[in-house]
Image (tube, rainbow, N blue to C red; front, side):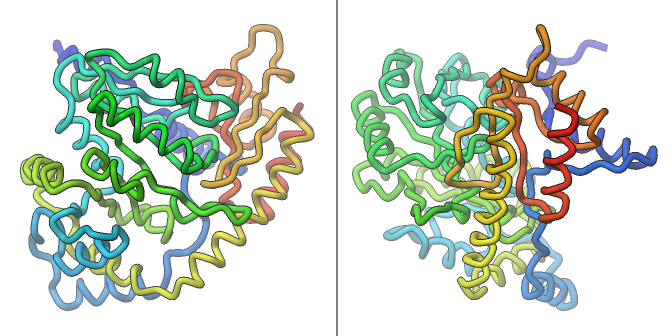
Length: 376
């Protein structure tokens, strides 16, 4: 059977595949500490669960509007000054949002500039849209604006910004975002901003959104999610904030792709927006403490830049690689010998690195890092 050239050119998500491997090892009786996990260990807030149950009990199980519940869109719009419900689209997680965005903006061979390291799905989503991903190295995980400008060609359609960054935890300062905004304006480019980790920024830093730059608003497409902020990964609720023309185009795709986002899950998301702000502050504080503990351990083993956001460390492991060992092989060695799961840097476009999540219990974090140290 001959499948399409497009699907054969796409790599499956290695982080998702890794989750399946961990489950298999556990079924075989291995005790595995999962520091590869891309979700916080916090429970979903009770108010979210209750609202979702109530929606089911009251038969909120029918189709909802393609764009999402109007009351949820209205609440989300208040977070983007000057936007209204016509600027918001609910999606089945931000992953689907990003997939649709590239389908909307890319013609065949159009280029999308993507700073490295990058989230695993960015490259493949651009390729699925017929576009050409153009990875550009960062400097100490921060944007290299000069290199980004040098990479612009007549085929460049967009620049992708992911801050706080997965996997590095880098938070891009407003000064660099302003440079990107000017660059996009000079070359008539779109800016896609993945802000899935916007709730988790540390050390007193404030998350800066490129959408806050008024002059850039007509070319910025922002995606966010309820998954990380409210521990709602299984709900699959993401959203896009963008100019009305972009939202209309995305809605057209969604009308054929999924029709709508799970109706009763949207009521859970609506309840999440009503939660006391102290909940997110408390979670942010706890994650910062875990980051500090993890960084103390990891920096004794590897060269590591302290992350300012998200919930990952992304150390350079060059000094512990044996002979021609890759970080993928090192991750396998750590899993086999230490019983600890981490993710290889190759997955994120940067060899000789590992991604280590600190969004786990303090006990698992401490034990996992100690077991890695013993193996090394």
